[in-house]
Length: 197
Length: 197
DNA sequence: GGTTGTGCCTAATAGTCCTAGGAAGGGATG
DNA sequence: CATCCCTTCCTAGGACTATTAGGCACAACC
Image (cartoon, rainbow over all chains, first blue to last red):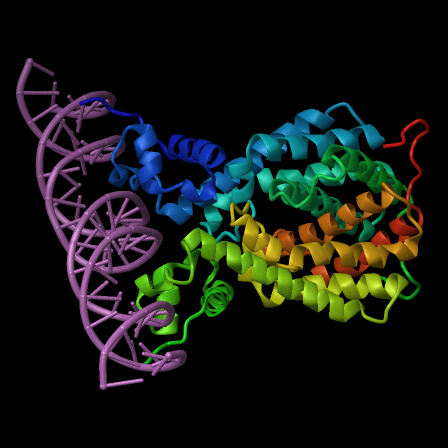
């Protein structure tokens, strides 16, 4: 009797592949087990539950996306970095729609596992680092980081869900949106007086 | 034997309520049937499948959200309208997290049903109408609409998923982001020469 | 009052998650 | 080399879910 060499990471990877190929809600214990040539009960030695598996897929996606972004912006600055950052984000969502969707589900996942995953935290750090070129001070910097993440996530998410009808190519809008974001970051509106928050 | 008076709409509503209370993936045929005091098989007379039900929930959410936005911006213009629009959007996502999440799933739903639902189309029209105050010309107007939808959706989506850590209240960031969007729309960057697209 | 159709039912199949307990491979230890 | 033990994977089974097929009873119309 051969051993399949399962680990939590291998199970997670199989689930992630399945999510990209068949859609996130086709990621079931049975389906992942079939893909690994194993009985479903065997997975429970490595993964606590289906919900746990989905959380791990989300964390994997966050790590992978962060890594891609880090590579993309390395050695770049200013608008160059901004565009590279955004394109890497969008490209990851295109390449891995299932994994990307997994990151959107409100996760009630093992906090200890989250703490060990570097992805989410590092992603924020990267964004802060990149936006430092725009000479924003706190709390504007935090707000700008959040705005940027919101816009990128919203665009890729809507695009994936078919939210942009056919009239105008999404790619054209994308380029213009990056222009707009860049402009906005360069001319970030000042706070009204008496608003230190 | 009492009749429950089921219709497709009543089933959809029960599913939507369940989605908000228990989370979208607790919306099952059995659970909806239980909530309606009915056997699960009975639902299939009104709804084609679970996936169909989820699609209907998504369409319901789109209609409701659009209605709220329409009420919010009625009689307003300029930044006033922008803020009202955005707040209505965000408030809907807060009030109905399950329904809102349903709109994010790529739906392979009956196209005929989609065509009959006024929500998605009307939402876009409303956005166009509101942004007309900013004197943008096509295709900038379309791009601005898409940017606006992306940012609002991204923000509410990230917020719902717990994406904004505790440091700074999300509400404060929200206000500043609306300022920023308004500023951006007033100073939309011009296209580079020789780019009629 | 009989007919017709609809609304909800029972019954059944297949697939799912997950638990409990058992067997067999692989490594450490005598 | 033999033994022990831990990990890995299995079999078996319970509870729940989605979906289909067919039946009965209620309501409306003639």
